[in-house]
Amino acid sequence: MKAIHLILFFFVIANSTIAQEITCSAKDKEIFTTRITKLQKTYTPQVDFGKTIVSVGKTFLGTPYVAKTLEIGAKESLVINLQGLDCTTFVENVLVLSLMLKNNKSDFETYTTYLEKIRYKDGKLDGYASRLHYFSEWIINNEQKGITKNITGDIGGIEIEKEINFMSTHRELYPFLKDDKNYKGIQQSELNISQSVICFLPKDQIKENEESITSGDIIALTTSIKGLDITHTGIATREKDGRIHLLHASSKGQVEVSSLPLVDYLKSIKNNTGIIISRAL
Image (cartoon, rainbow, N blue to C red):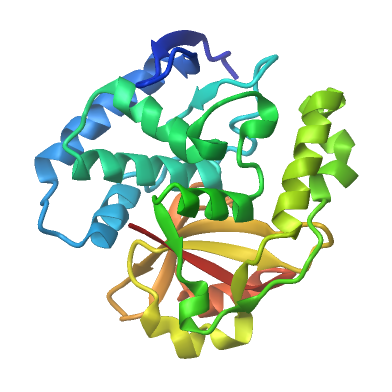
């Protein structure tokens, strides 16, 4: 495999004096420019925002799945990788590009600013522990920012009572956690999540509430695995069969729409307990 040559870009974040360090290949910047240009040509402002999210998401169909796309370099930077996506970076990039269309933005600096805002606690990159590693914390923090809203409780969801500590109890799996500062930061995040109220829709109740899920909703798969909150995420899309399917970066190989409706797709997911639904505002 050929090495990817990375370029470091530096920008000043709006209303901030802190330089934003970005890890991005020339190819990825080219892909961004080409993609946002094409999207602007087909974007219709009057269309429901959820449908815009699905349309943007489907432009990534066939993009290879790549695990741990953000775990590179000697220190935390804003990693841009549009050539390979994991389930979280897929959702993040789709949401960022959709917001750019909505706000009539097309420049790379806005893209990186939006991405940082979504990916990091309170929208600010400040080391490894500032990244929203646990997707439940991603949901909580982006709701606090006014970007998304967790609607699970509104459609019959029940509270999760679970101690979250998978990263700190599996320290050896995360190279950055060799650093004690990073380790303590992750422990604090885990404590915050464990003390937060989060609702999920149990697996056996999804079908009866499927009509309340709309295209563009962000779907997070909850799990029974000890210490872990969420194992996968994607975007809801109502397909021609009238059912909700999952548009996602599948670990089986690429970005795709699940062939089965979400309810049936989840039956094959080991340890799945249900879902959390967030809606972009």
